Each structure stands twice: as C-alpha cells, then as structure tokens.
Image 1 (tube, helix red, strand yellow):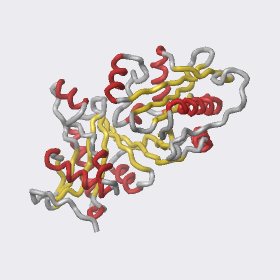
Image 2 (cartoon, rainbow, N blue to C red):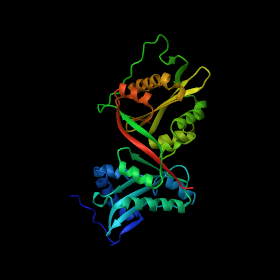
Image 3 (cartoon, one colour):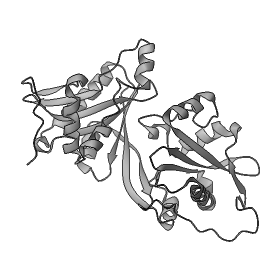
Image 4 (tube, rainbow, N blue to C red):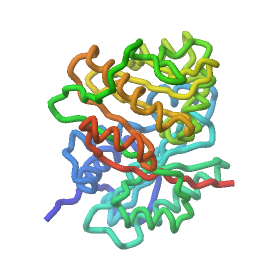
Length: 332
C-alpha cells in the first residue's frame, strides 16, 4: 500500500497549472512514488523549473513573462499526476519531462489529459515544437505520445563502464609510426578554426534537438570568452579531438566533458563514409585520454542504430545502460 500526499487545502479535481510555492513538496513526493525513486533523487529530478536559474533571469531582463513550469492533476485536493514544462535555450522550443501518475490513478486517461493541457498551452502561446524522451521499454508511454501526435526522431543508448571506475581499454594493432597517424587521417586536437565543421558533423549524426533540454548551440565548439565563462560558472571542462584527412577535412570528432562529482561524458561522431576505418582509432584515443583524468565513471550516449560503434563499446567492456527514444511534436 502506498500513501498519497495529504497536504491539500482545496477540494478540487482535474488539471491546473502548478503553483510552486504550494505544490513543489507534493510533486517531489509524487515523482518518488511514480518513478520508484528515493526522495533525494526525486528532488533532483524536479530541479529544472523555469522560474529559477539563468534562463529565467534572461527572460526577466527581456521583459518576457515566465510560463507555467508544468501542470498537475488534483483528485479531491491531492496531487496525483504531474507534467513538467521546461524551456530550452532556443525560443519556441520546449522540453516535456517528469510525466508521472501515481500508481493508484493510472489507466484513467489522466496523463493524456495533462499532456493535452500542455500542448494546448503551447499552441495558444504560438510555440514551435515540443520534445520529450521516453525509455524504449515504456511501451504504454510511447503509445500515449504517438496518440498525441508526437513523431519519432531516433534513439540514443547510454553506455557505462564498470562501477569500480577504472577506464575501459580498446586494443589497437601494432603501429610503426605515431599512434595518432592512420591510413588516410590523423587524430589531433580540434583546431580553433574547425568549430563550424565540428558543429556540422555533430548535428549531422544527431540533430541539435538531441541535446534537449538545451539544444546544441551553433558556437558549441568555438573557443570564446562566453563559452569559457559559462563552463567556469557550471564547473565543467572539455577536450575535443578531431580525425582529419590530409586535405584538412574533418571526418571524426571525439569529446570528453568533465564535471565535478559527475561521470565523464564521452561523445563520438564519425562521418558515415569513415565509420568502419576511423571509429576504433578515435574511440581508443578517448579511452587512452581517460587514464590521465584519474579514476572516474563514464557515460557515453550514442545513436542506437550505429552497430559498428556499439560492437566496439562492448569490446571495451562498456555496458548498455538505457535506451531513450526522442520524440517531437511540431505545433505549426
């Protein structure tokens, strides 16, 4: 038997916008039950609310109204379902998260009604697109979003190493020359002038929308004071490596992004014509670099359809942790 939150003050039933000053604690408790999470992790789930943080500050400076951070469903005054509505860093694009319904109230159409409220709000405010992620195993949720008109964009599988934190390894054939020189290309630090090519390759393999709740910025790989300052404030750092042909064509991109007290996040992007030849050397380069960063866990999100890379991840003794489907609803 699971207890419901009881801090209700009104005897109401149905959907309504969330009121942060009154509802936050109930929503956190709801998410803990709906997603079977410890209360601490449920609270972390609900930190991305638009009335706080850098995005809200920018909106206020621009004189823009703050949109409701989501909708809840009350049943006799108790909050039994929630949908979070998160702005991205691009005007008109929003991310839907934390679609949770208390187990005692599922299969009653509540999630569908809440999603309808969210979509209706977005249409009324002339927004462009809504995005969401859903676990591939959550068949019921996938059918719900399909029924609401969301289209499939693709799938991303996140790979992780063993819990002991030791970096994985990938064998390479013996080489007589520089270990970063291969037939037809060289691996080297991403050049300052290659930031546009890097963004183009990154978004060719996975669209910029796969960065939600923050869409990939066109200057993501540019060495600028703005990017440096943002990394400083967030406590992040990254190193970028490029696979480059003798004609200076960028055919591969690899990144290690580090953040205090979090796993290193790895990224691997290969031009389709070079996947067979360049994936192993570029991945091996990343794994060698990890040895200099100390013991740490890693997270490597990668397109699920890339069988070549996934075979190499398994060879490096990485384990597939979760596969998320990305879905999109265009409102215009």
